Image 1 (tube, rainbow, N blue to C red):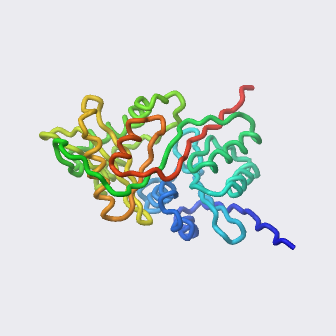
Image 2: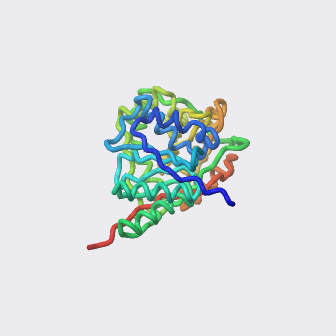
Image 3: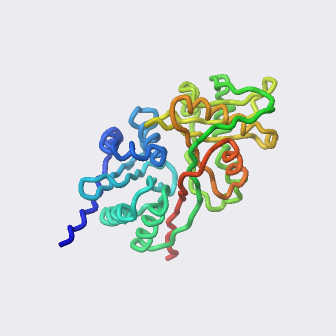
Length: 299
């Protein structure tokens, strides 16, 4: 007689620290794949970021075994979920739990095919269609290849750079979408305040590339969680593009993070410039992801 399949269950949390503690055995098995989830949750648990009202986290189990994790913390519309890569059964269990709660997810972002499954299952129940607002790829740094011959130097941002950094962080989503040519499908974006940027500067998470005293590029960094740091954002003003500053800045930031562990970043698959750039620096594709938006049917 075959053994009956273990039950798929979903445990919701409103305490980020309790979620991180309960999910640690799972996160340790895939610290890169869960990096967005663990880094942002860790920032909330530390008090660096205030959670958006109604935020929650979830762990997916098959019997006693942890299978996946998700969160709904986005402070922008359509308040999409974020899912780490997980088996199809866990994704379907999450969709069922949301339906039982009567909670319409505005979108489902993250690992494939899990994010697509949740979006499609919820769309069938609540009505509407699913649109891919962005196809992304998670990359991990292998052997770093530092570009040569680029004028200038890297330095950490200081409080004197606050206004410039704030303006560039704010403009990054627009510039990235413009370069990729997919601005019309964009989900909302978190807009950092000057206090947010000041905190990043204080934590030494903003690296600038400077040429003859002029700042020409910015690379952001997360602090490592579970031994993994992430590069984001990467911004070069239009008038300074095409001169290697982006490659040099990302390489310098990557080297700093690599001293403390593994390094990853995301690319928009519609942006051939960034995908080529990171491959030349030694980043290797790890897993494809996507941002999905649930579009309600017109009455």
